[in-house]
Length: 390
Image (tube, rainbow, N blue to C red; front, side, top):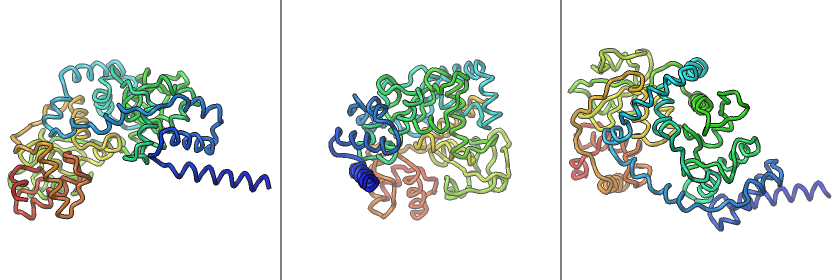
């Protein structure tokens, strides 16, 4: 009977925890997290120490809804993020941590420019790592029903870090979305892929640059980064190119792109046997890049197209690439106009990933297809002319 009772109790707890995956009263939600944590094998003492004092953070919810910077086009966005100060400090830190970067490239095959770029953009090389209480933010976002499947597992990963001595639920702070440290990694990634780079027995992404850099490289490798391969190279395009062949949905061998007239801006393209795509962030009259498989891995770090492309380009700048040729792209749409376009595309049956005013991958795909149908250059860059035609 005791075995049966224990089984029934376990089932009851499981049902109770499952019943409130998100939403409802915040205190009831936290109680469900406590129960699930104990089912996972955590002690009541540990669970209470972790969850006692947790509170809902309205500032986190406001930040989650307010991400207007990602509506800016690539040229504008990249010029805002890539400052001379960041270029200078990138070079200084590359030299200061030369041995760490040498180890990173040797063990993980991730080029130093990539981690330098994310280190710069995420926290200005550790200068500002965020002041949101990490546990409050994670529990708040897990309770919110917008993306609970992303944040609920992070709560339990943070609990694991607490038990290993690498997180203080009351003192650890970071970004509003729960990322921690110099390169802003989520607790699950820190727990599973964190590296003790300085050998002190702890994974400290807030205070140890070697820990942060090596952990970031290990995460990229685990996400599919291919050792010692390129990620983004600026190219020049022939004027009579079939623009419908551009975009991440079309891949060819680099040698085939060369036969179609695509050339590296410096005259050469690396790894001509690799598959790659031609990327036009602002259409056929703006900058052009060859995007290799490693470029797509960066979307596992951040899902914003303009952010990832800027970080990937900045990484090449830090390794000696010239400033891109901005060209003369056609004027794009403002956020209101972009929403109007997304609404029209949705009415036409396209899945644009939500009407948010952001030119994401799905909106680009829909734009490119509609441009082709209307006889416009199918370069996936939405213009006022396209909006008027629709």
